[in-house]
Length: 292
Ligand code: ATP
Image (cartoon, rainbow, N blue to C red; front, side, top):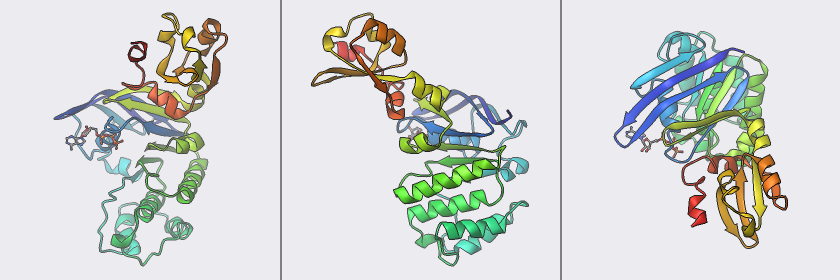
């Protein structure tokens, strides 16, 4: 399987924040969700890999080439959806499209018109009059109409109603059917990841915590519920995100077999992506605070 994007030891420093040696790869055929708490660095990573903000150091390799997103060859193969859009607000959707289409030799006008219709967007409407959801749909229609191989999107579903979100997820699935493609998107809406993502990358405080297949994560992690009396020094290190409940405690583990052996009476249930994220970020994983 080819990699659509490889990032190695990417560093970027702002006054009060830094990306530290960020490394990950996006293989083709994969929808990758980029998750992490507010301020973790998701948008900064996306902007840096797209060359919208300069990096301090690191390697960014698109489509196996030693070229970054600034090169024309790479740009033509990328579809980018950011909420700001970078549109001329006084233009109509059709007028703005003509400007965008001119930059792409592989522009597919039929596909664009099909998407506008599917999204119920009026080609004569002015950009400045679009609602947030309409703007997102328009951005996506543009990004999907030049046969991009990799779609990079910053929170594409935030602020969209459930109907539009479902529509967008269906379209992304269809987009992937052609093969050799990939999607990389940041989100806080973990139900979208449940439906769509193959892979998850978690970032916290500017550092990548994990990149892993979603199904393997969901297979490994479990919610543990048990009596407070069952907690002791040998099981506490196996648990994260511990909290008291009316009946005892609840926590998350990625070592369910050891928990089963140590606490045969504990209840083990499937963990959600939110649970997995919380148990891997600072503040969520510290059991010492609970033990005090
Ligand atoms: P959210 O989920 O809230 O959108 P995020 O994970 O996308 O967050 P970023 O927007 O990448 O996080 O921000 C990471 C950190 O970088 C924040 O502390 C933010 O204040 C800081 N930051 C972002 N852009 C700049 C900038 N241009 N100058 C200085 N600091 C910045």
